[in-house]
Length: 241
Image 1 (cartoon, rainbow, N blue to C red):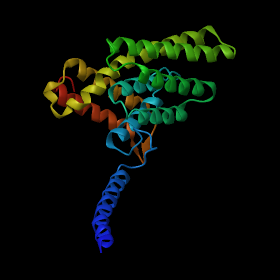
Image 2: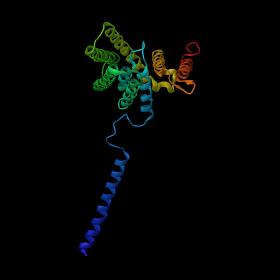
Image 3: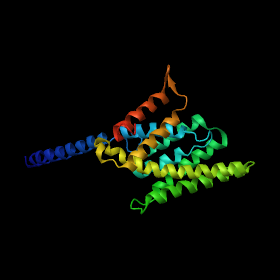
């Protein structure tokens, strides 16, 4: 009898422990796949970053330069840590639609290195609006000049690469101002003139990346252009619109 009573006393304890284990297992299952990379989850933020990255990757400057892809990825990595892989995917997808050959390889390598190097920067970095654009400028110049040197480079190519690096650095500054101010759109009065200009510049580059895309007879560029005019009128009044 004493042996049975000991078993009876032990059994509820074991059942309680197992029940606790099952609850822990349920909680672990609810967390999702442990191997899924951060930032690739289907969230609104990731979707918007991917969509913006796609159009910015497609944005051609002077018919051959693509400075917006690396600039946007660098700004997204600083502004939305953990969600920036979506911007990398979108930017690379956009580049594939407009660039070919060695130029595509150079652009994608520049985007990848920009992403990794920006993530390596400390979060408490002083003067990020100076350091990050300088990083984008250096990577664009080094990678694309190196690839150009492999073939038969010309003076025109080197000058074009230099200008692309400069434009990429300038766009990085603009995007570093524009992306953090997106959170302020709930209260439009808190936006400064600098932030309004940066947001409009970002939208303008996105519109430039739409190219000749259209749905049926509706041009995507036309729709977004009208949207920018409405947003400008809303933010700055009738004069700015």
